[in-house]
Length: 584
Image (cartoon, rainbow, N blue to C red; front, side, top):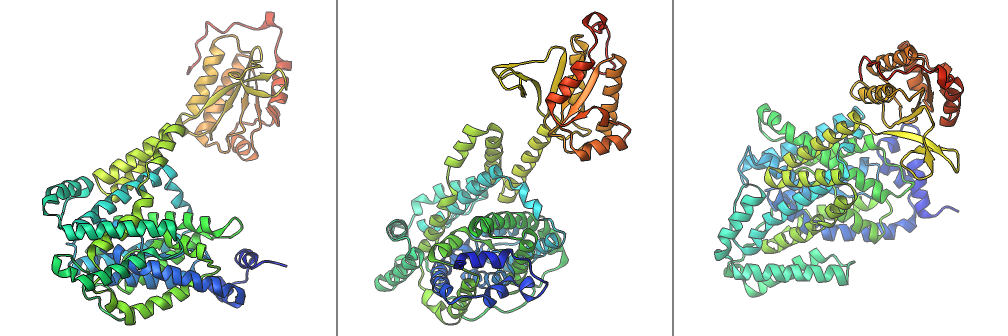
């Protein structure tokens, strides 16, 4: 008999006819919902709600927007993704990274705290959604692969540092404004003499309480507990009169549907930033969906683009900023026992009740506590260990991560992301243009062919056995050509065998160069054979006039034996060392 989790997997992997559950995956969950799942979904909903309410208001501050916009983003995108997303467990809503990206994108066009800034932020969310929807229709899910692990590690570390330092002024009770990470750090140092001791003490106490609760009783929503305790402290000790800033009145009621009244010039200005945010939203969300989906859970990459796009468009239409998958809340829901997206629908209902009836309770929430909640939330991003591991394992990837980090801190969050992706592409092109070539020899123990650098491997006398570890195209075919012709020019090579197992593609330029190399070998009466060449490149070469079917073999050993059998007697072999090849 299938378990409950296996049933969820089956619902997500069995092909379905086009219908409601195809358009809205949650319909399949509802139609096959089991009573035994209800307890886990309810527990997960309460857990996520308790974490989401304080976090959403804090993340709205990162985005430079009023606290209620965080509640809007926490509700609308969450419900939309629950209906259309293919992951049964991912929670979508405001995140620290995306909020910081939103603020950085809008800041050049409007001043934080103004109605124009709010309008631009709302418009940005809609543009991000449209970009994701277009990418989904065009089936461009593979674009997220450009966010390599080194880029993400450097990007997240830099973003975490920027977010954290942007909240320290709340904890200190000062107003420190500076451009970028280092500008903010300098501004904070200058404001240190004006630090509000009550704000600092409250912030430190809140941070300690958060940390202790997370470690000792991780199942308790620590952020909500700290929020409640701090509100009670403000009221009991009249902390507002002691100079501690509070959130103030939060408008009650549901968000209204509308489109920001800005011109097309604003749309054009925000598109470049929206493209970067869309890539980050999709890349992080897909990694999260796959991670929590389980080994057998099917997540449709292109449908995820559509679901995230709808979530961001809807979030913008209801006055919110850009959103994405949340790792902390998804992990919390999974730990609490979430089975399906029904849990997210429950969270949405709780948030609606919060906006209707509970917002007055948060009026006395201290700003230093909101800052501490954000700092504590992004501590998971501020880790140097991943970079040190990259340095030990792969120097190039460490360089990419550090360059991305430096770009984020020195220039801007999106600029740093672009720098990291650009360097990744440059290094990828470098590897493609200068691929590894390996001289092979026969293993005296096993008879197999391996690199001659290995112990017990001897080169085949008079035969160049060369492995080319890349696709063969216009930018790297010269490496193959020069390696072969240089070896032939020594005069000791009588035959050439190419191990082409890694050659999965050949373009017309490479085919022409291969033809020239074969002509040179033929003029010198040198044998040639190719081993393990796949059907597609073999056929491409034939269409370009290079027919290798007569000298193509399934194994390297067979190719070597064939060319050795063709070698003439040593006394009949002409000496070509004095000849100069056309293109050495």
